[in-house]
Image 1: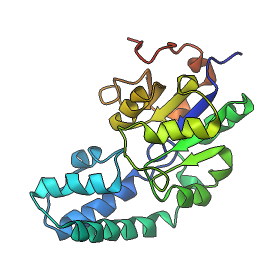
Image 2: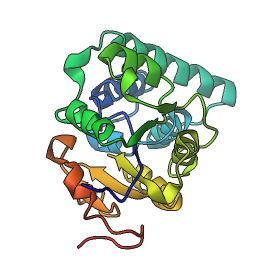
Image 3: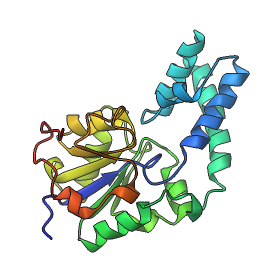
Image 4: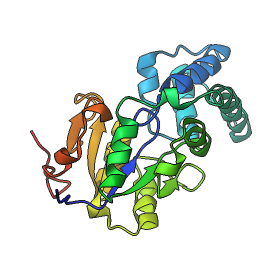
Length: 226
């Protein structure tokens, strides 16, 4: 089988591991302390964006304004709660199909990179045993701009030595799919077609993904299967 790509770039939360629930619990705890109504639907708006941008969205829900120093303090508190939870993660929290698909990519000699906004990506990868599956790791400690800016994926392609057009991005957030498009990359949305309709292909999880499907993807980011 000859694949028309050279590399796969993976988001972390919601694609490889289930950390979204911990983000939600930490943000909801902060929202409760600030007396801000915060639902699972509100949490969808925080997927794929940076910590500070997520805080801005949360504060907007309550119509609250804080100084930059206070915002840093609030974001740090949320992260402390989140890190406490993810520090107990293990391989059981790898999402179905993720490990098998990562292994299949390596067996097919595809280069593999992580492209995540999380500043805790290395901790999660080490705790779940996924770290060794990646040729490059680009996370929130190495980027200046958040998705939908394509920086994280462009840095991933650069680290792998692969042209963006030869990369496929795997994402569960609309902001990540938009980042892939802006970077000139095709994408596979992991989740709902209603949310990820701009992706080149949408599957419910990596468990439903095969390398053969990659051979059918359009060669242009503008060609979206219908």
